[in-house]
Image (tube, rainbow, N blue to C red; front, side, top):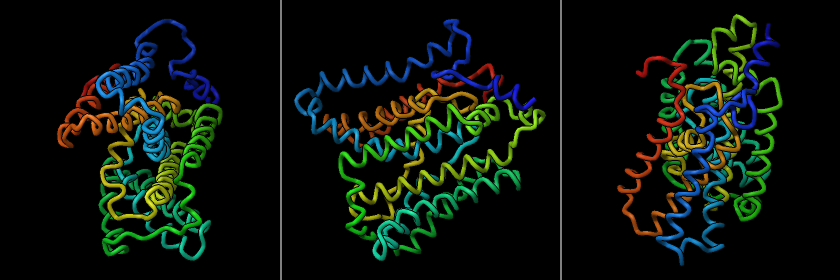
Length: 326
């Protein structure tokens, strides 16, 4: 029975299943690419001399790398039908711990950041599955808890990163790292039992339970993956800035979730595309970069980003799956 549900949940590259008919899901997969091209064309026309330069393109890619790394982790959580709002504070705290440890031992600082992230994710997963607290509330509470711990630990002051790790955040090393993470996540999501379990649980959790899938273990695992990659994002961001700051991850969870949704992964779970999450991260980075070049006020940038996010949710939401929108 478990084999049956795995086979039924297997999606193709675009997450539409084996049916070749041109339906809404086939249209949906094109939206991220169309949005990317439209935004790129808009800024190329309105800010040609400053936007269309190799230096600026390099900046956009570097800005998108940390966001993509964290978004890959959230992708697994959302595909499994849950949500993680704690990645921003996890990124910050893991970066602070990693920076502190790196002053003694550089490589150990990376391990420490990954460990902190994984532990936060484990906490989220255990409370969510064992105590039956909705993932939204668990991760929101964790966001506040970790945020408070970070302020106490750092005394609201930045921690300089060891010079041995600064190279991680320099172009093109940061891109190579993000590419490596992408390849691993792509293989895990598309070609492993764990990836199929995520899709199956997000598609229909009750059927997954009846079919004998390890639902609780998979749920815990996706939060550990999300925390682990948030921890990696924290040390990479610290490497980019040269120091870990107590405000590095403020609102980062919103940007990461937006990248996943803009990539066409619906918040209802069950389908998704790792490669489209990359496009979502690039869209957010390019949008922010272009608006800054045009001199658009920060509050207007927030309005524009919010409108784009709502539009992305509207286009990606699986309405037939949930019936009533609440």
